[in-house]
Length: 211
Image 1 (cartoon, rainbow, N blue to C red):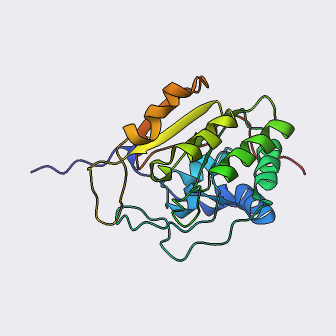
Image 2: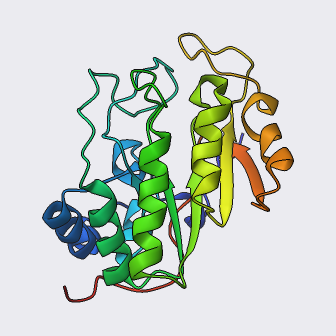
Image 3: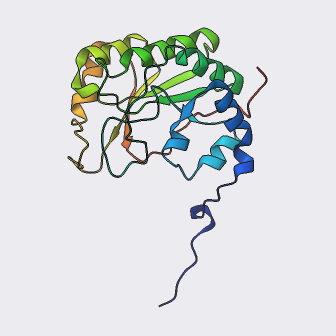
């Protein structure tokens, strides 16, 4: 049997030098990205272009999905200054579209919904033209938490669809339990769904700009 070489586009090369500018900005502002925490193979390509998917509410998930590389340690305390730092990063990167997500925080009463809302508000103040996409957890199906997020009026509400109904340790809700209520709110938010291992990120802008 003849063994074919993998196509070039499938052979991802991790180049630390391409990530230096973005990593410096993230370290300075004490921010996390899902690119780093989920070990995304596209990280060099995205970071070199000044693109990233911001991970708010810490980097530890309260669920135990075995297919995900995000940490499963005890969650950190909520950092109330984080929304302002995310907004500063968005402004310095000059992003036209930003994606913000979080680990699942079942330890918080609202699942972190208020922090999503405050992050949207902070970005609106400093970068009013930036399109904001929120990739939200299921909030354990809590309608009040979802309405808190919708009240911030992000441009896009997104939620990942897992590949099987009940992965071990995940306790995920059906998709309809998370995004279906969006239609009934009248908020006009576009909805988007996707697989868990998603190639997301901020689009537009360029390399990190000056403070």
